[in-house]
Length: 376
Image: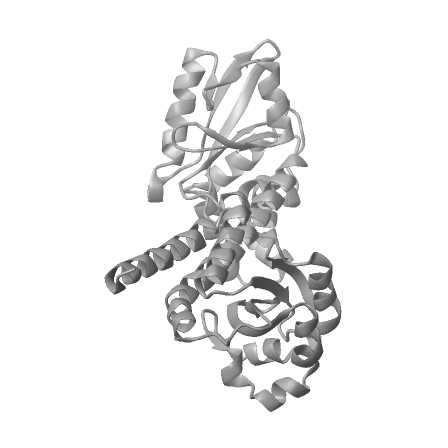
């Protein structure tokens, strides 16, 4: 193949590996493909990705080439990782940096260390390209591309490929870690909403339903007063539908977003809905790229005020902010709250400003009306 064509093909391989890295942010299957593309790009036989404690002493998760013997991978994780000089040397690397083992360990060191003298030959492998993919307070992610026992050490071609691709692979690893954390937080947020007696829907500006708690799912299945058509939440009564869309638009008004409410008729009587802008601090919004709102259907009239814990999960408030909201809804003053909490009046006012911001309210009275309205 002419040198020019080889160069073009090499660039295509690099571009493909980088693309796979970012495709792997949201897909485990594509993440495996990205790790394997790096292996192929440096002419390695197998790869082994591990997640370990910050000191590299205990492997908590791992992924290996499909062709690699899984039993041997488990044996390494359980019995050899803690004493692996490659992993220990990797602790000096920053995410996206890599090392070629023959440049770090001379022949004498390799001949005396159990990893090189015994373990790697036992699985038919030897030279390693090690890369730090990620490092957090609680763990690190390390990647090793390994060549078969009789293959030469990694060369300049492998180095050039790694220099181009490794930073992108590390960036994708960081994005994957963040995404998983956000999904867990969002899941926890919805689990908390499931514990409420209220029906709660998470919707976007087009009234498309993104999430709904159990009570909301039951309400939708009943078909009374509201329905979901082509993924959009709709009120059956035209007047209620117009009110719903108007309140939703108000909750999506950016810095001017506000909370609101409306009623809809049903066979059981009037249903009282509250529409709330979802602040970015709320757990259920963490993995969403667009603005969202909450639609809340209160339980039958006469119910008690929500507890501070319930308001915390529903409105995305901190525990102190939730206690303040309940305190005000009970008809007490912010001065009383400061005294009860052992806080200054200024601190209590700061909490109130946060409550106003997170609920889309402009005045203290609106917070009181909102909290009382959520009770039914």
